[in-house]
Length: 297
Image (tube, rainbow, N blue to C red):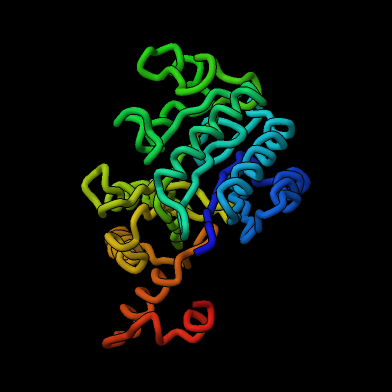
């Protein structure tokens, strides 16, 4: 079985198309790496690039893209709705086939060391690559964001895993790790009241008693509407349709309807099949009944 790894780095730039293209171009120029998707959000001021390849190619592409981002993004003037620590906020490796999680963890730690050596940006390891329990969750590492990074690093509990305990002057810090497939899913509400979105997000996220393996926050979308922005960390525990239905039920409590929803990046076929099974009330429906799935396999 050929080795296939997905990499989904998030960059703190969603408005300057030339910068986004320059970063994505580094991935496209890396032999063995294939770009699947590039999405940018002006309100979040953030872009997500999804690419795949063997572990060596993906690592080379991630380092090249990080180098370009550090050159082109100055966090001192960055503003956006989404929490972030630096020019490159997070770089996750996701094992797809022919590679283990342990190999992805090793590659993530090696990449972290290369980032420090080449770019002098300090690095935290998270998820399966975390060096301690309190660093497994991305929101915990991001707490305080770029603006509070210097003070955070001065705390002995938050010294970076690689590099000096002080932010890069323009690029802040990076978070690198390995994780299972994640679905970035946003639900846009028919209101501009972001406080409603924040209340719904609190009901949705696991850390405040909501859905299992769900992170959520309420923000204003680039269309000026309130948005519930979610990360579904394990869609087998909380599928997309369950997250959508909870947001719809909570929104109804405030007299608000849903405008639409969106997937950021890519989504596993099984997750889409689960939603079709639920909403169409399909009985005994199997993945093998999807034509494209049969052809791909």
